[in-house]
Image (cartoon, rainbow over all chains, first blue to last red; front, side, top):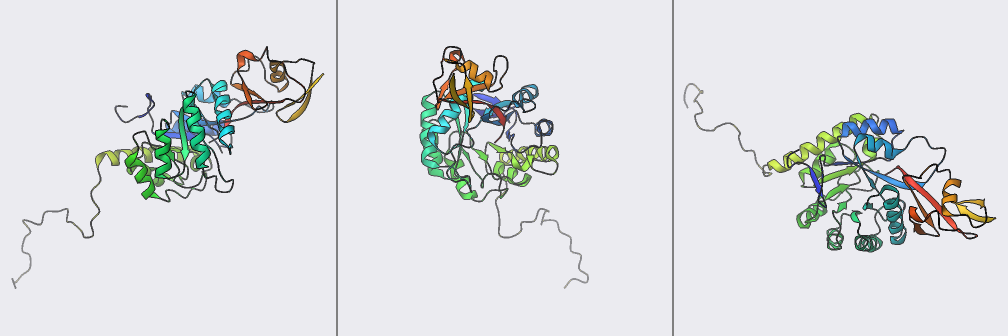
Length: 262
Length: 69
């Protein structure tokens, strides 16, 4: 793709849609949805090995040509997140990480102080850090200043499907950031993804809206189209919002059709 | 006999067993591709598995990538 792909830390991706792999019924449905999504990057989590488990997600991603981005989901402290990132680097042989530090188990909102601390530690350790962050412009700037390769603000809580609850904050983050801004979490349906892209986000990361949809591969395709449509619309430049109508047909050359003339 | 916790389960390994042995005991086969290990919260790089001996009561976590995020 010419100039339409996503570039993060010098690495190019064809798709601006990043898929989470959580919540799919099985690896087969996931593989099918990945294909229709067009995504070439997808997140994975690090968990204890289960000898009874069937299939390897890494093999599925490898076969599909999808880059596996490990996350630190489930970590509530900077220390745990840093250790998890280092374990992921060992297991997956990548120094990329989607950094998550959760501060509250009901909302799954990020823990800002530990998030920043973990980001600083991991950047110093040579990681390419993609932090899942609150939609807070100040925190987003701090993360960028800490050397993160992108910032990934939430639209609304993980899995809530509530869409973009604070477009104003997202816009402020977009205006100030020099690194890619990726909307991460909260997408419920295709219009949410399109809206994020129309606002100028560089990409969208989503999982539940596809994996828990009634037809995940079909929703994955919808998300692909939405991200592409939103991106193109943003590039094309929308018209301003007006209070009153503006005719789209010429007002000159209108015939006089009232008879007799008044 | 050395008793350690492997992924939260109490396991008996031969005395002076290595991390490598703990990885096998966790059910990982062959070279353990895609697997990472922490002992007492510290990462043990793959190259050190055969030489790192476990002590009584140590906590071994053997992880791999799963669906998530």
